[in-house]
Every structure is written in C-alpha cells, then in structure tokens.
Image (cartoon, rainbow, N blue to C red; front, side, top):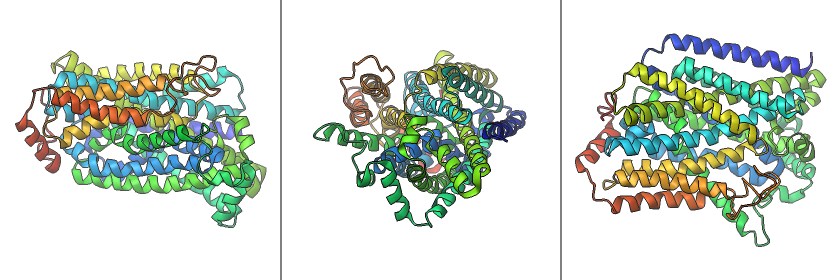
Length: 536
C-alpha cells in the first residue's frame, strides 16, 4: 500500500471520528454557555490537554521543525519564545480572566467601561488576530498535502485549503465549544504520541547522544559550526543591527502574545472554578514544554537525516521538514514500508493538528462577533441566546471563507513565521487593554479603545510595509517593493505603542469609575459573581 493511500485512510478515520464527536457534542449544546464555554464542564486536566491542543498548531509542529532544520539555533528561538509565553499567561491573566469574564475577552473590558465602543474594538481585534493565525494553518495544510500526494499543481493545494476550511466550519457550527474541545483533546494526545515516536527513533539512530545529532546536523546543513550559533536567520545587513532588532521584536511578540490570543483566552472560561483555570494552565505548560523540547530533536534530526537542500526543494519555507524526517527515519529503521507508514501517520497527525486549531480560532472569532458585536453593539443587549448562537454560526461561515481565500494567497510564507505575526498583533492590541483593565485603577473607556486600535492598527500597518509583504523572494507580492519598514516582526514598535496609546487615551479623558474597579478587583481575585452576568 502506498503512503498516499495509507495517509488518506488514516486521515479519513480521524475526520470521521472527530465528526462523530462533534455530532455527539451538538446534542449536548443547548444554550449559549454550552456553545461558547462548553457548559463550563471541563476539568483542569481536560482543559489543559485542550489548551495544549489549541496551542500546538501547525506552526509549532511543521513551522518550527522547518525553521530549526534550515536555520539551526535561530529556529530554536521560536520554541523558547512560545514556551516562555505561558508563564506570562499563567501569572498575569489566566485566573483573573476566568473570574471576571463570561464568554469573551471583551466581557472583562466592558465591565467597568462604556460597553459599546470597547466591545466593538475588542471584536475587531479578535477577528483580526484570528484571521492572521488561521492563515498560517491553511498554508500548513496546503504544504502538507502537496508533500503527501506529490501534488505540484496550485489547483490541488488550493483545493486542500478549501477542504480544511469546510471541515473547520462544520466543527464550529455543529459542535460549538464542547465539540471543539474534545477534538483538541484527541489531537493533543495524537500529536504528542506521533512527535515522541519520531523523536525516539531519531535519538536511537544517534545512540541517544545529542552531541552527535547536533554535529551531524551542522555538517549536513552546509553551514558548519555557524548552524549551531546565533545569526543565520537574524543577521540581515552588514552591521547585523536589523537582524538583532528583528530577533528582539520576535521575542517580545512571542512572549507577550499568548496572553492576548483570543482562542487561548476563551479556553479559561470552559472550567468551573479559578482553581481549575490555574490547573489547566499548569497542565498546558507541562504538555507544551515537553512538546517544544521534542521540536528540537525533530528540527536538528531533519537537518541531519534529510538535509537542508532536500527540505528546501520540497518546500522553500521548510514547512514539510517534520513529515520528511518521519519518512526518512522510518525507512532507515524499519525499511521502506516503515517509512511509508510513519509518513502517513505523521501527516495525518499534522492534519488533525490543523483541523483542531482552526476550529478553536474560528470559534473564538465567531463568538466575539456574535456576543460582542451583534448582541451588545448592534442589538444593545436585546437579543435571545438562541439568536446569538445562530449569528455565531453564520459568522463562523464568513470567517472561514475569508481565511480560505487569504490562505490560498499566502502559501510562500513559513507557518511559524506567520503565527509570530499573529502574536505581535495580539500583544500590541489585546494585551495592553487587558493588563490595564485588570491592574490600573484609573483606566477608562478612551484608554481601552485607544490601546486596542492603536496597537492593532500600528502592527497591521507596519506588517503591510515590511519585507513580509513585498521586496523579497519569499514575500506575499514578489514583483513589488514598498517595504520601507525593515523588520519582519513589528512587535518592538507596535507593542510599546499599544501601551502608550492606552496610557495617553486614559490620561486625556476625565472618565473614571472607582466603584466598578473595586468590584472587578474583588471579582478577579475571588471569582465572586463571575457566573452570573454580562452587565450591559
């Protein structure tokens, strides 16, 4: 049996299984709390697995392994950044957010401020971040299928992106948060199992000696010792200054971005207590920490066994390094049949990864549209829960369609790199507003709106005029050059700008509500009254 046939069988089995879970979950989805927050019925361990499933995206599995395989040390910085980010989420956001909100990030902001402008801003920001993130998953899906079936035609890759988009819309519209969470739990277990298996086989090949693995990877990369030192990816001009600034910018975006990611933030609402919120983040950190250590072996293993040239030949951005490694190590250890089986398994797991993450993202953005924009801004709260959930399902359709179209155009970009942009947008717009709201007594509506629009606007604006969009072979528009902003990640400028806008908007406005701050402070620290209400 060829690996194509086997992969299709495994993939269809996973899809059939997850669709069955989704249909089962839909029977238990009776109201808005079920649709948005899974009825707050998940334990800390289950939610920790789901957080892992949500976070270990195609970017983590395919993109980071590819970046390490092509750039060595500089690629591994993505792993470190994604992992350290969880400490910020745990220490500053998880428990307070669970206690003071109901379904979306905007619930926290709207509590002590004028709700309509704040909900509008938060809704726009959530949808923008989710679409950036969805783009990355779609690009990963296209690259994966091209490798698996040997497709070279653009039509086949585009058809794959459409298929993934259609499936994610089904998961969200039918299963809501319950279905999506169970899909993520199943996927987290599969991904950890698949990554651990390939890692053990690679380490076994090198006698469980990391030094031998790293030395072979450096030799095969064609870069020698430079492969194991900083500077391969982030030293773009004679002085190396642009590269260093880009590196700092990337680090800021990754470390601060997680605490502002909408699809991660809504996960904290699915547990019954603040203690469970803490526990789920601790489990999440454990699972994610182990996984990112595995990416180190996967990336350097791909460099040593597959070689940078073979990886680039298949996909210039390196998005197929992990499945190529699975095929190569399978062949060397278990023969041709082993290579075929392992490639099919890893490809099916990677596909499962993409489906689970896009479902979470689509749910976050459609929930925000229905709950924040439709129910509270357009309808001023005069809306039934049933109508709100119906609008969320329609929004999932529209957002899915938009991300399919954009995904078709962004196929030349590395998926980990695309996700780093989503992190920069989240850290610039959402994080300043959230932190100020939870910790600054003087913060008000003007500050919240200014922080979100200022951070979000500056991040998107700088990306539009960066080398990501034009002026490079791997850019979105290869035949144009309007890149006057030299950095690929805007975080170093847009994140401080978001905080500055929030501060400036607040001090220039007279509005101030001491009683509401006192109330949200008690609620954030104790959880008292968090179940009951959205208040406007």
